[in-house]
Image 1 (cartoon, rainbow, N blue to C red):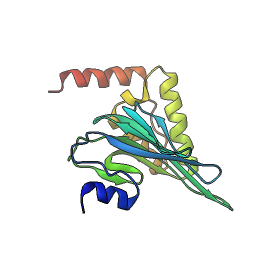
Image 2: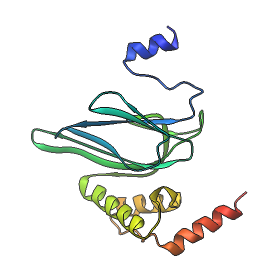
Image 3: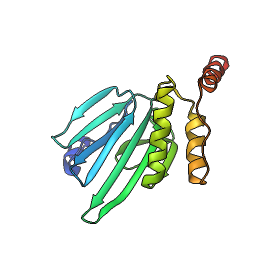
Image 4: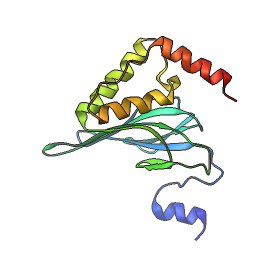
Length: 171
């Protein structure tokens, strides 16, 4: 089977080995499924139909991917992942709806913790920092602290300046 035949057989486009982008499939089925990007600078967007689209990110891009699902009895899943797009062929973790995968900086499950992460993102943005530019170490810190039942440290402008300076001296 050729690559084109394989793509048709599975009903969606498979990323080629030369494709440098990380693709995230988003969906919105009212009161059932909501997959959305909370922050991130997408390189391109492809609309599949009125309920689905694909955002694509360049290697190194950081973005937050929120997934929520419900049934007739209420919420059955809610999670947020803050991810970094990887270079083609680079090591990555698999994440549902993300092709080929990404580096996981933060993974939180359960609506109360997801809400805490969303509030943390709001606070970062209110401090005047683009959430995409935050130190990846900080997102790992937030995920680890929340998963341990602890409160994460705030991301201040002083921390952000330190991160930017560290980037300047790194080879």
